[in-house]
Amino acid sequence: MENVTASFDYDYSETAVLDKLQTEAQEINNLMYMYTGMYGITILLGVPLNILVIITLFRRIGNYEAAIWLLGMAISDLIFCLFLPFHIVSAWDNFTWRFGWILCKLNSFVPFMSMYLTAFILSFMSLEQLFFNKFSCTSCRFNGSKLMLLMSWFAAAVLSCYTSALLHTAAVLSCPSLLYRVIQYRKNGEVCMDNYENISTEQVASQRKSAVLYMRFIFGIILPVASATICYCLLVLRKNSFQLKSSMKYRIRKALVIGHCLCWLPCLFLPLWQYHSTTDISAIFAIIVPVSNALAAMSGCIKPIIYIIISDSLCLPWMKDDYARTGTELTEIGDKNDP
Image 1 (tube, rainbow, N blue to C red):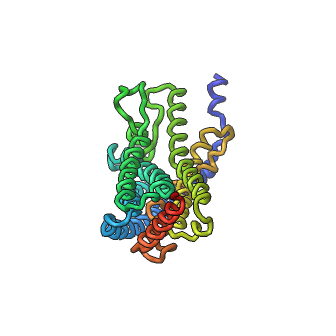
Image 2: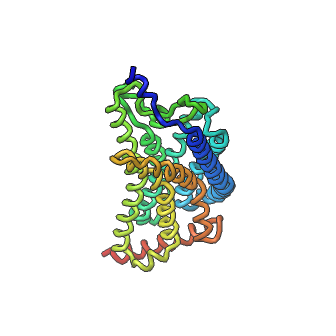
Image 3: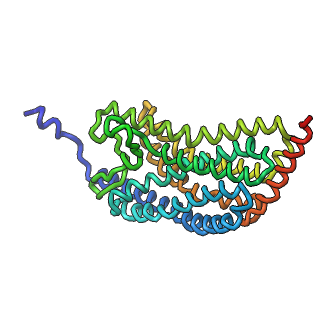
């Protein structure tokens, strides 16, 4: 009897409990205002600016091969921004999800699809400047850019998927956001969140989560940074480095890579850190993880802002002049190398 009553023998303080509840409520309110504010800014900037970029690029897509890259990123960012209102409503409703399981899965799939697509396009833009610009024919460069854009869409869709042979046949691709994103029932209502366990063992769930986290970090961050760095080093060997750095296209591409990493690096690195952490730092992650998620959402509006800051216009006048100059320079280099 003593053992039974001992388990209930604790110092109960009603004031302490109320203070804890008030603190939790205040933290939830702070998160709600932070998410609503940052997502709202992203929508207000991202939707009109990306629409303007799309309209401008549709007028130029037949003339400049650069347009196909920027158009692909603008469309994906616009779709990303159009899904953010669901996050705002959910955050404002005490983070309760009321839109069903389909939108729950899509609301996680679309951001990572956009992230993968941007990473591949930035990588292919670097490769295109290194290899495809040696063709003096504009149509050849445009067709090459269009082919690699289609490859980017396909690769982004595939890498947003994670096949599990234990749950599905080998022919079925299962997307992490579509497969592992579920609605959980909590004390404050329904919550849309990732669940890697499902009916699997804890070890399988841990391996599955690790594979998804590493896949996102490698292809979302390391790939575009490595591609841009390697291609830049190779271009320096072929061209004057000062001439390359003064190129408007180079400055915009470098800014796009930096902006992409600034937005997505915290969101992709923190889960890996949390996964491998052996100490209890949950209090730290409770603060920085929501901020990193909101920062990742800013990627939906960062690219048009970069165009405006660097080129002082959304009409993208740098595409024609920069590509024409690059093509002329490379043609002259080829003529000098001819015997």
